[in-house]
Length: 216
Image (cartoon, rainbow, N blue to C red; front, side, top):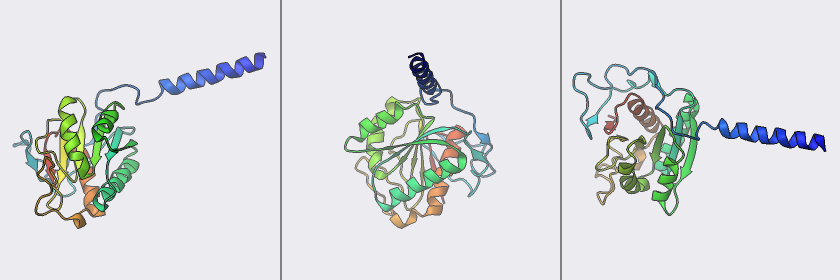
């Protein structure tokens, strides 16, 4: 009997420790990035205005990465080739940077799924999929403390907590605007999607938010 009680107590202690050590249990201050931006990412003498666009030099983002354990929710919707390519790139980036990544796949009520992702207290929510653009426009302005990164699309009127990465073959903006005349699903190559998540994350990590990062 005493042995059973001891085992039960040990199990409770382990369960309690598991709850306390869950790094996602509470919000936290934004972790400091590791490294610095390279020349050509942004002009220091002319910082971007809110909702402005920057065109960083290729690779100027390579010197910046998140601290180990950076909490990211990958929010995704859709199984089309561009979305799949973006999801693959985000997961590869997270693995290489040792990011703590969790995924929320949006269903028939994406607004509720975005709200659920916010409730997980991530350091960053990365959105992949054009079908999330309009739902994000509904939610993001009401959660200004939560950073968002939209890869391969952008919001028509982003708030300061929403950063986007786009290029000539992407630039879906939602709100009835649809895809631009230059939209090209074939432009979502592995190389372009990899650059998108890395450049976008570098912008967010260094405080350059509420803008569009345009890949040339």
